[in-house]
Length: 431
Image (cartoon, rainbow, N blue to C red; front, side):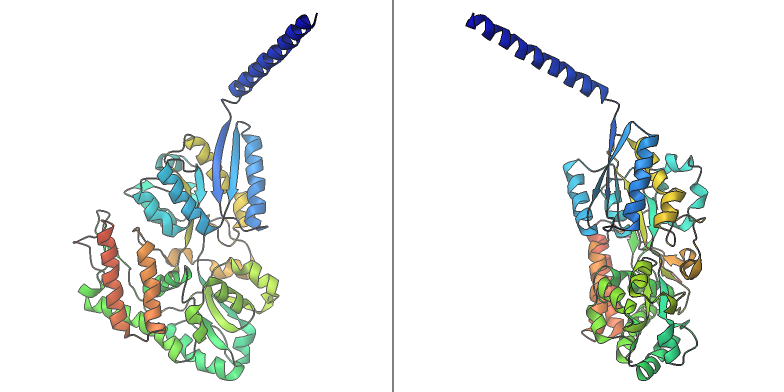
């Protein structure tokens, strides 16, 4: 009797296990058509990018019930490190946010999908700025798409300028320098803010170089580059003039001496608190300005020019990685993120779409700046941007001769290009 009961119990358990196995097999079989896209991003906590992005992704999943988007949020520093680690391990995500400074390294690692055939068939392709697409194209292959543009404009505090008796912001370097002592004397505040360290220091420097008709490195037509300052006396003179501009800002009291060690957070915060009158900055400052309650005091103008009108064009791309098993689906998600709902909701004043403009001071202030934007050359930038930051420090902290600093930076750039196999011996010199 007991033996029979035990056999019956064992039969029930085995039957249950078999049913479970069958159910699992059916579930696995039924999920074969379910696609999971890994999407890495650097949304700020409780930001509009996050709020609107999650809604767009939820709507995308409803429209594509066979696709699940696995969103992972991390800081930009973590994002870069994790991307590099995942590429080396052979398990990169399908899609990631990123910075434009990473573009050359990721392309050089042959990690990026060629998006040209998808882009050519995209109905909205003509809405993206041509020079932005050009900056993300290598050897006629589009290797990324823009997420947002971090164009830089001159933000200024109207109250401080009015108190100093100034009618408006400076239009040239010379006017900016002349305003420094006036603002300091009349208001007790400094006229201008810079970022002497961190990621924004080389971004500001490349803008000033472009305003003096200089390129960091010129391309020879074969994908290789060279800095030509030391081969061209006129270029070296113009490069030295840029570093003299930094030095004059400090010597004439235009900038706070503490700015030599500021990163982007100090630069942003101190301007929003009215600690100084003007700064070159991006439209992301909208939230910071609103929180500080100084929107009515804000004016926006093009950056002061020297030889030419120019600003820094920061392109934050979407990267689709070459090893994705779902390139068509990844492309569809990128199209959704570049659609009107996300771009209007999250990137109203920094969209790469020509038809997304917004209204008011932010829209008016940044309108037209994309066309005069300067970008980093398509070279490995790790050591190059460090050397650019060091060059700023050499003139501001060590008070080095500007021409010596310019010559040193030109040599260091070429050393980096040579080490990375990107140095050209036949680069065309700019006039």
